[in-house]
Each structure stands twice: as C-alpha cells, then as structure tokens.
Amino acid sequence: MESLRDILDAAARGVFPPPDGGTTIVPQLSPRDAGVLSFTAHSVVFTDEDPDWVYGTLLGVGCDPLSASMNPRFLAALMERTGRTAETIDAMLVAPPLPGEPPLPLREIEDRDHPRIRYARRRRDGVRAWSAEGGVLVMGYGIGGRLEVSVEVDEAVRHRGLGRRLVTAARHLAEEPLWAQVAPGNARSVRAFQAAGYVPVGSEILLIT
Image (cartoon, rainbow, N blue to C red; front, side, top):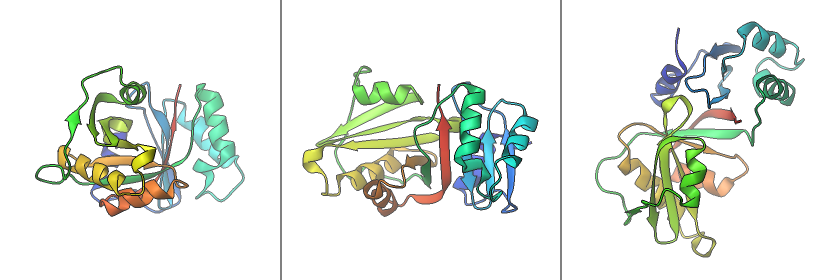
C-alpha cells in the first residue's frame, strides 16, 4: 500500500494517482497532520479514521463524486469526526531544487521566538528561516514529511518582485522537491510562485487541532 509520502514524491515527479474518479485513503504519517489532497479526478484522504466511515460519508454527500472530497459537507463531517478545524483550501505547488547560491543575500534567523518561526513550528518540523531586506523566508517539513516553503514580504516593498526572488532562493537552499500551499484567491502569491518555477499539481486542505 502506498503511503502519503509515496504519493507526494510521485506527484513531485509528475506521476499522479489514476484519474478514475476514486478516492484513496492512507494513514496519517504524523498525529499532527490530517486532511485531503485533490489531484485530477482522484483524491487522497489522509486520516486515521475508519476507511468505511470515510467512504460512506463521501457517498452521502450527494454531489459529483469528483468533487465529493472537497465538498463542504464532507469536510465539515470530517472535522467534526476528528475534532479538528481548517483554514482554507489551498493550491498545491511544487518545484525541484536548483544548484548554486540564492539570487539575493540571506541571513539565517537564529531567534526561535521570531513570530514567523513560532507560527511555522505549529505545522512543520525542522523549521529554518532567513531574512532578506524587506522579507522573510521559512522552510520546514510538513505534510507527509515533505519540505515546504512560505514567505512574508513587508508592505513597504511589495510589487517589486521580492516574493518571487525569495521563493526562487528557497529552491537554491533545498536538496529535494520544495512544496508550497497558496490560497487560490491570493493571485499575487500564485503568480510569484509560478514565475519562480513552481508548478500547480492539485489542491489540499489541512485539518488542524
């Protein structure tokens, strides 16, 4: 049986679950992380809940099976069942690492109480962060043990390409595929990641405690 990490590693290589309208259920790899991934015509639910309950609830949603796993009725039932909550459904993007040095100066942040690091440590392991003039870059291991990136750009220096340079720099710091989760409505961030070579591969929702 494939694990969540197997599925993510394959997606990073461009190999996706079969577009058969089905749903794959896999165990959580961490007690912290549960949720749903949606690829083209196939979904992956990662949870330690009873698979029979998951499949039965999906059937009871009463919508197109291709949409059932991201339907609000199913997600609400899954959150109630697990005692978890969620923030948003994100676009899921991935990019391979790049050789060489980052394209802008970075200084690693050693302060573990930095607000951005504190926030990231709630959802990721092995968190590291770097500052650049006007921005912060954060990397750590999240869903399925994959390497994830997020950035923050100061209001005063936005619209100057710093976000794109930061997420490009992250690829130079990485030694494995690098994942990003971006709210689809945040068009500015979506464009920055795509301009830096990140490719959308699906959508996801992370259920948090």
